[in-house]
Image (cartoon, rainbow, N blue to C red; front, side, top):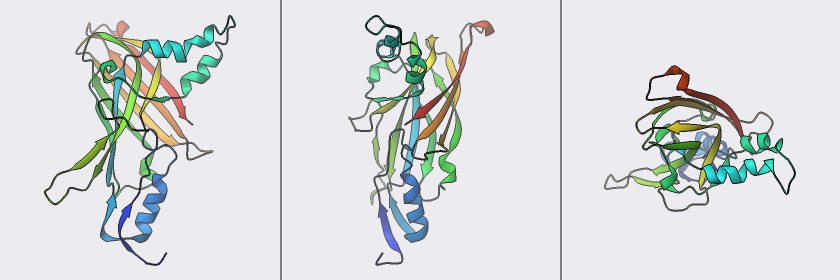
Length: 227
């Protein structure tokens, strides 16, 4: 490298679910080794967001078609299909809850170790409907310009198409929602031990029914592998 220190680092490191392929690790190493004190890193903030999704038709097509493939029962493949999140475009009209900012990373200060995380989320049903999946996306933010305006782009369901699309985690149960009901949960994400470019993700949820009847509460947990 011709210079000991640099004024600006610019990198497009984002992967599916923001962190897939662990490309941010090398950017942080470069920041610590080469960026001058007070230098700029572009973009400098990134956040992951989640919401609930009605996606019964596609879930049946992707998951349950294994029960009858040209007359043959391949249902053992359902477990394999379930653990792999779907990366695809989501119709914003299929989102059935509020969204929650799961985590935000400040690239000026975040460490590689902090990219593995476990965060709680709280969602509220926005209509009476079924929820088949949790959908996740990320937003990217650049330092404010000279007029103090933030420069942001989103990969969410309401945003313009990007090749990152959204990441869909199909639940192993269907949540029967009523408008205003709460869904509490958590998401843990860490690099896979054998291949740190891949992600191991665990999602837990607790759907609190408006009837306040404990027996109608829907709780679940599922492990996913983003390969």
